[in-house]
Image (cartoon, rainbow over the protein chains, first blue to last red):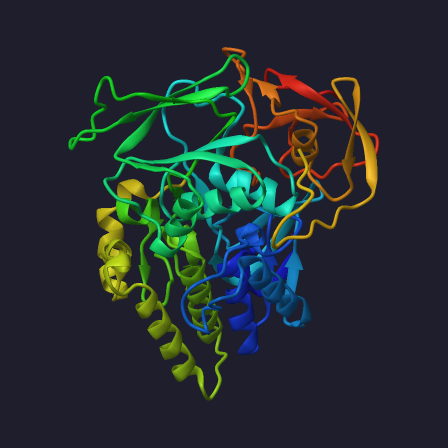
Amino acid sequence: MLACEICVIGGGPAGLTAALHAASLGASAVIIDRNDYLGGQLIKQTHRFFGSKEQKASERGISISRELSLAVEKEKNIKVLTAATALGYYKDGVVTVEKDERFLKIKPQKIIVATGGAEKTLPFPNNDLPGVYGAGAVQTLVNVYGVKPGRRVLMVGAGNIGVIVSYQLLQAGMEVAGIVEAAPRIGAYWVHAAKVVRAGVPIYTRHTIKGAWGKKEVEGATIVELDEQWKPIPGTEKDFAVDVICLSVGLNPLTEILWQAGCAMKYVPELSGYVPLRNEYLETSVPGIYVAGDAGGIEEASAAMMEGALAGLNAARALGYSAPDFNSRRANILRELESLRSGPVGEKIRKGLEKVTLTERREMRSGLSNLSLLTSNF
Amino acid sequence: MRITEHPILDFARGKKIKFTYNGQELEGFEGETIAAALHANGVRTMRESIHLHRPRGLFCNIGNCSSCLMIVNGKPNVRVCVEKLQEGMIVMTQKGKGELKC
């Protein structure tokens, strides 16, 4: 059994930042990640980030990932277990882990769950054919391995991921036949959308995919226009000969370990699924278990890093670690988060967080009893 | 299909290695996943679905969705999207749930 102060589950932007901030106060941390590398999904993000210096603005995701991983490797208070999958959390506080086909036990004093999210799929005929991918899956193939899964792509979803990945597929030399978006307008930042439109890619708003076709693999797709009630309008179908269909229809928080630990969970559409209740310190209803990043609600990598920083500082503080500038550091992070979530872009997130962020432990307890049906002990 | 030129990325590929896919000899690079090597060779079908026997390929590519399970060196249910390619690997399409062998 490995005893440690803080166990961080997930080595993406939130987890790495959490471990670094905890370690900066003197706490020791163990990062567990099921991949054989650190950085999570940053490793495929070749676009430049927005935001402030603190949020690593104008850097590409791939270089942020390298930078964070290097800092973690240099930090003697952090131990890294890659190719290690957290399997479960037990009532005596033990986290079980599979690594190299061996079963490990870790007994941390605090846990930060930073497991991230996974891409959703969409129901339509033949959505299981090879050639239908999550947009992030194709991004990994193209940007990490330099392999194209086909020649011509239909992208479903004009949010940031759909539009950014479309542009990156063009950079990789693939053809993008079009981007389909069910909403009446493009969800992505205009600076990204303008790039693909300039490159000649049509964006079909108020359209959805009606079906894919092909015998053994995708050979094409049919899209259809939607009316104001989001119902398909007969006769408006368009066919595309494509060998790749990318789905960029959002992500779900990966919360299995939080469910299993018995954290009070709530379904919040604005945060893209079931997420744990948490207090302002990002601690869940199970004392000592914190959440950071997409696992607590789908947002984006800049916010995930800031939440990781916050959870790392708070978990270390709860263990008795501090620094003379602790309060100002935490206040800075809170300000960064507030600015990321400000304005109309952050409206959805603010609304979602309002539903799950409880300010008093007492309130969390009553929330817990109201949600007792949702807490699990399976 | 491999990308040879890219405006912002250089692909540092490892040593060229050989593996087999359903008995056919193919080439890939050390350091890449089995799924990436198969895609580079134009192979996008990984298994057959359990009940309706429909072809299934890669979906999430991060080890989460289990769409890409294959039989690798005789072992079923290997997530080829996260399993790294090794010299001489025997990779087979998986049909059904796979069997545990003693």
